[in-house]
Image (cartoon, rainbow, N blue to C red):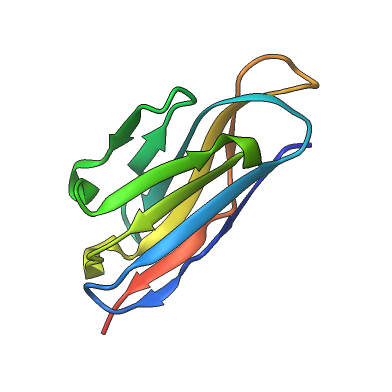
Length: 121
């Protein structure tokens, strides 16, 4: 059984910072990409940032220059450092991973339960 567990969400003032963490646990053979998506009320889920196993990264246009994604492959963990937060960053942030479980030996897509980030004064 594979799980993604997020932490680090909360309430922060505009201009502030937060760091999200997501750890993958279970019987995992390997992890390809790990990343973050977000969904604000009434809007579609959108890409925030993704990091490949090789270290390449990709960011959504609205967060470029403010957010940084990083991975600790030894811990099967991905982080999202969010700086210069704006009210429009308010959303539920979901961790996502494409990984190969030992039980299946094919790439599968997994989602975390989501963590709320609220940017407000």
